[in-house]
Image 1 (cartoon, rainbow, N blue to C red):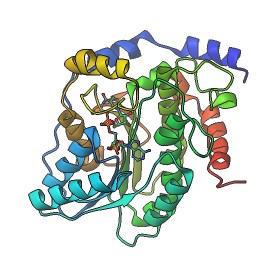
Image 2 (image 1 turned 120 degrees about the horizontal axis):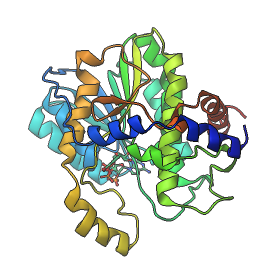
Image 3 (image 1 turned 90 degrees about the horizontal axis):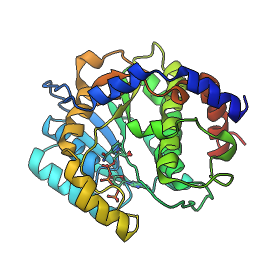
Length: 319
Ligand SMILES: NC(=O)c1ccc[n+]([C@@H]2O[C@H](COP(=O)([O-])OP(=O)(O)OC[C@H]3O[C@@H](n4cnc5c(N)ncnc54)[C@H](OP(=O)(O)O)[C@@H]3O)[C@@H](O)[C@H]2O)c1
């Protein structure tokens, strides 16, 4: 369908009640899970800072072993030392720059080859850029870190997770997917035909993540494996540090003052990973722990299938 037709299709599908629900949900606290997670394995990306760091600590405090996928050796060493010392669980890491297709593929293959079951897989790593950046593969960076990395890792793990007959995938998404109000431009994923905007690009990447969830959910139907996406709240983290001094000044002196603690996000992610209430719930979007209807472009199954094909090409799975 042409972009202009999509525009009108989505416009008709927008419902004020869903927007009001989001505003209400933004004020809610997450549900708390008090069950433990002893000796289970949690794989988490971007555990060296912000939401990922607090989530890693939360799972470890509840008895889970961790396998962190990070880009920094020094930070990973420090994290695992801290976690093993404080909580007495296993904490290992793999180094992967999730903006590099080669690195993503390697780590995805390593995870797929593991004998140990992965009980929970959390895709958390992310960045926010105000200016467009291309990766070494010539792809727009936000698209790769937020979306293609999750796609490639999930795709590589389908058979392993199915064979386990039980696993939960949680993608840290964002209410920011709503910034892609008129949908994903599959003809311009690299932002060559449009003026780049950090918010729109972020919204597009998070929309792509939600669209892929629709297809993965079908792959995992009746297998015991679930996949959901959650918005972790508006919380104070290190996000946006790659941007210029003006952005960083505003973040530190204005935005950060309105934001909550990332420990709230960690509680919500723990609930998603462990709570028996989440058993068999799959293919859904949550604002923290409250189920919510995402924006119409993130529910467009026709675009989801087109994106799936495009992602297989972009990642080199299908040449
Ligand atoms: N903060 C919020 O209010 C908010 C709201 C909605 C959604 N989110 C989402 O929450 C997730 C976590 O963000 P955050 O706010 O916690 O930000 P953060 O403090 O900047 O943490 C981001 C994590 O991702 C890692 N990372 C970034 N680029 C990477 C790459 N190329 N390869 C591997 N790891 C990489 C970072 O590693 P380093 O430590 O090496 O930098 C860090 O561990 C993101 O997906 C974000 O979009 C956040």
